[in-house]
Length: 205
Image 1 (cartoon, rainbow, N blue to C red):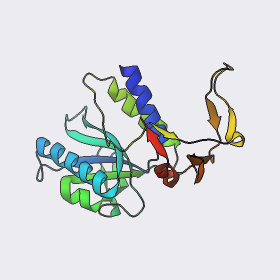
Image 2 (image 1 turned 45 degrees about the vertical axis):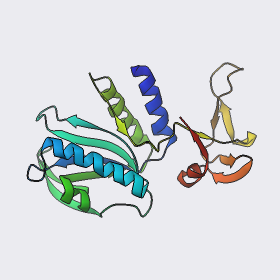
Image 3 (image 1 turned 30 degrees about the horizontal axis):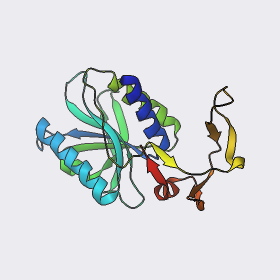
Image 4 (image 1 turned 60 degrees about the vertical axis):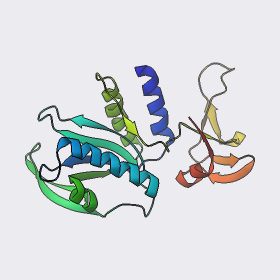
């Protein structure tokens, strides 16, 4: 079961686009543990339905303080950020020095603290994948994710977009495509692969 969960998670993470890694922490003056989790889930639900967010995340306890917080990777469409991102300079007790972080005004007011890290290179997804798959192996480990994250996008491909075959078996139909391969919907050209093109393609899980 864990193997299948890892495989499915890997496909969902690598097939889709992500632009932020987010951590939510609650303030005792605003929430209890129960109201924080309920409020965060409610925020995510509305962010998906109203602003087309995508997310995969987990509620987890800090190993040192046992305090509940939320980690997740997000795709937030252009112009759909709820609240504003601002740079905040504060003291990091873990590293014992000052730091500058990117935080969200709406989420800070709603929960206490939010930390946003831009995913500017897909290499960062490797570290995030390691964290998420590691959590799956913990007893009772369960990820939460929005329902609008397909495992596959369906498209015809052009022969010139094939970089090489995948695997050593000649009968294996899988191939590796170039990063800018063309996409088609029932024979009609949609565009080069990108977040906007993916939204126009048929999807499958």
